[in-house]
Length: 242
Ligand code: GLN
Image 1 (cartoon, helix red, strand yellow):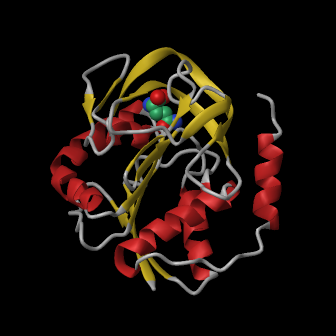
Image 2 (tube, protein in one colour):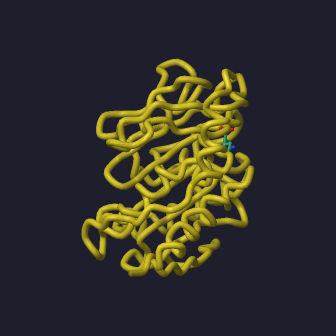
C-alpha cells in the first residue's frame, strides 16, 4: 500500500514545528510497511487531485496567508475535487483558517479561503497562547484526548455542515467562547493545535492514516506500534492545567 502526501506551501505556512506532522505521519506508515511519497507544493505548482491521498497545511503569519489565499483561488477547483473524492486534509491554524470561507485580519482585506470547511475567521483583539487539551468523540474506543499548543488571534466560528473535532478542556480553541476546537467536514480536518500536533497524538495520526488508505484500499486495520514515548509526551501534556 502507498500514500501520496501533498505538503501545501511549506515555504510560507510552516510554523512551530508543523513539519513534524508530516514526519510523524510518514514514519507511522513506514514502520508498518506502508509506502509514502511526500511532495511539497509551492506557489505556481498545479495540484493533481487524483494523485494525493493526504494534504497537509500548517500555520504562519497573516502576511504569508495573503500569498496562500491568492494561490488558493487559482487551485481551488483541484482542492475541492480532492476533498470531494475523499482525500484527507489536515490543516493547522493559519492553514485551517484558509480552508474555511475567509479570514478577516485586523488590517487589510478579507483573505478568501476555499470553503471546504464551513467556517469563517475574524481577527480578535487578544492572542490565545498556551497549551490546549481537547476531548474528542472521533476516536471511538481509543483515548479521547487530543493535545497541542495554540498561538492565534483569529476567532473561528463553525457553520452548519462542519462539526468541531472536540470540546475544549484546557485552552481557548476556535474562539475562546463556545468551547469548540477545530473543525471536521467529511475527511477535511482543521485545528489550532501546533506542537507539533501528530507526534504526541499517535491515535489521531493513525486515524488519519486509516482514512487516507481507505480512498484506494478500503478499510484497513493497522498493526500496533510501540508508542511509549508518544504516550509519555501526550500524558504529560494533558496533565497541564493551563
Ligand atoms: N494569523 C493567524 C492568527 O493569528 C494564524 C496564526 C498561526 O498560524 N499561528 O490567527
